[in-house]
Length: 564
Image (cartoon, rainbow, N blue to C red; front, side):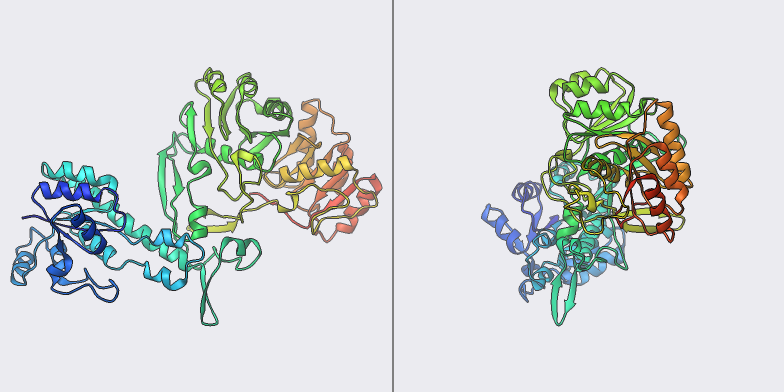
């Protein structure tokens, strides 16, 4: 009689599976709660302790770790010596193993769980059985996912294929690998302090405590493929789209719960490419800076235009018209649902892709007229760049900075995500955040304060070196990715001239300090009346003097926002 060993934490579908196995002539061997569940359902069950001759002991810590269990799992069916050893020692073969593990991840998501309770949720016997069965996959079918129960029974009605066995093996080892990663990630958040185990939570990081929490000596990350992409940066490069898999600790699992572009829905359009997704990400990051309706048009991860407005349609048109030439074929992000008016504005010109929190039903019909335009909806509420309020469907407070990774030749870099925290609240002369100070004789006007804050939030998302010119509600000219600050100003001035846009009365933002006064002189010549920059140059006094000469108000933030 074939034998199946069932020991599951998640009892979903286990009774139906037990009945299906029994109907196919299997002896059911089980433990603890699983055995009781099957027995209560009227199924004949052999307890593991009856197989091993040993009772469960040590509060259930020891029950399946026994040669009479593992010998039945590991005996190779095509090795006569293995089968002889099994017969000699009275080891019965086990043909099917159905195991899912102690709910460590669920327990770890509860921040108040005591350390010792977490440790008790570390499964020992379960992973051992899964790994043993997976290693011997040609002879043992190992199932870790209730979604595979029906497939198992169907395969047993014929002869299980090698492909099916191999698929189950890979899934089983991925399951135990993710389980171990969850444990490791959780323990990385726990410190031994004076004989007590104390857990560092996300709010501790945001308060500046344990800031290195997620820049540990060892970082393990699991990714699952969402789909293959049309191509990479160029058509001859293959590319794929992945999302991180939750790794157990309360803060880490929450951070890695599918969200944003990891849980996006594509409503229409051609296949997405690698660059489409980079641009959608860049556009969404800017849109998320604003609570009021905002729109962004991106080209090659830099904004052609960005604006706020009284409605999504108003914001989009203002953003598009900030640089209508560059906006052609751009990538658009909005922080509000796309309504009919916005959809009509979007389809009036050629746009490659658009991302928003949702699309109204009536608007879908309008967008569908542009059959190749990619339309993506995503909720960024679980991402660290999300702001409190309405942005991209967000209904929760700002989260601490997530970690960003980038590959370099033979290595990886990691850093906390840059957050423009100093611009979360409005800037006024009476209520400036810590670190901001006016360094010139002239103070900004109320209108300039609004425009400086707008410019500063945008500037942080433009490739360095950058200097941008804006008013309080939209970009006027963007000088992006230049080798010097003067070049960045000159590019912005050139763009404004091409668009026949005046920079008189604008404000300017620079992502890093002006190393010499020539950059500030160029800004003043362009027509800006106020400037925001980090400060910190050895020649700050020279630059401040230049600003005073031009009658410009200048604000130092004390924070640089390079973007490479």
